[in-house]
Length: 119
Image 1 (cartoon, helix red, strand yellow):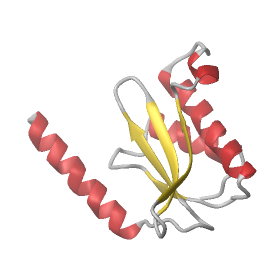
Image 2 (tube, rainbow, N blue to C red):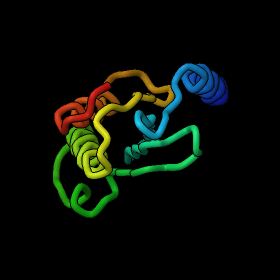
Image 3 (cartoon, rainbow, N blue to C red):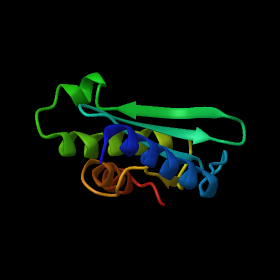
């Protein structure tokens, strides 16, 4: 499959997911963006259009750790769960961003669950 076709297909998947998944102030959307080298997550309140908290593998305490990208992704999930707890949030809606629920995306979800988030 060509690169342009892959990007178009993934964008359509993202739009389809976004129609079904919307975050509120009490239950924000946990959005995952996966690049080749890093992973980024955000807690988003879609009703007000505000990002409540964010975490990434580029944060100093996570980037300083040695390990695979999947292990760092799990740390990112735990970091966002900790930030959500500080905001008083316990439940979120998971948005995989068009990626398969596998590998680094799954590691973020497992880390967030271990941190105490429910979805």
